[in-house]
Image 1 (cartoon, rainbow, N blue to C red):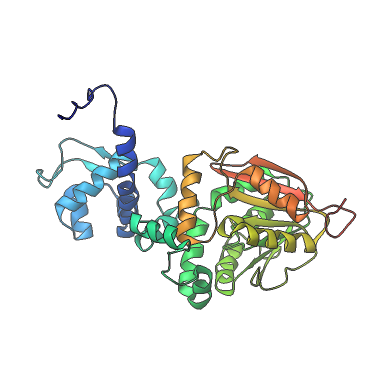
Image 2 (tube, rainbow, N blue to C red; image 1 turned 180 degrees about the vertical axis):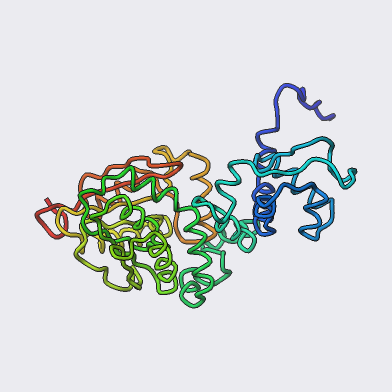
Length: 361
């Protein structure tokens, strides 16, 4: 029996699916451009394709392909006449950074994302790696090694990861400090605080606030640098500790968990929340700072894709606000609320009952 003729090729488009398929090339091109230092080179002076080939000691065809992608992404623009591509000579247009590249792809920018992007060169989520993570239901970023144990055993890996997380946390940190009322907080504990930028941002905006950043020993050294750089070392201290194995410090009326719960399965999240509840002062609050899924768990896409990162890197997943509220109530907290802060980020908070140690009514 003869096959039916294919449908009218103009009646529908395959572009949405094709765009999804091809998107990972953009991420790979960006990671390579960061590793090569393309943005730093062009920040010093615009260059032609020929000039950039000379700076990078690479041939014309690969650099042309990379630059074409970066221009298409809006990270570079061409100035001048001519093509400058594989058929061109030494002339052609010059390549210039756009403002978005200056804001996020130069190390001197306070909102530099290059630390995060550069990690993709060693830990890119390929289909094969994702299949392995799904089949085994275990993180694959460091092969068979537990990621957190790797951090303890390899200080260089811990510092690299912490700096990567710092690079995506500066803007959200100051967004949280602006969106949440810290004026009534006297002592803040930032559990798993990484570079300390969340506690630092809260302290910068609230001169009466004191804070402590708690994390693993190699990570704390990065936090010391950030705290010193922002000039708040007199009010922000550090504690080297394992948040699951060691007791949490007491005497804090607010405890922050920023991008912590999404790293762990729900049973571990419940355990940590109960530990937080035990040491909070009566009436104190826990703050959960995360990139949340919407209530129907069907977006936004960027936050849904972080769930894929969690498969590859950790044992966790992204939560929605109702799911966080349920975890908080199960742990004994009262009155959970959620508010968007900046970009894809939100803050969820809940209180420990003022009259009992465990939040009972």
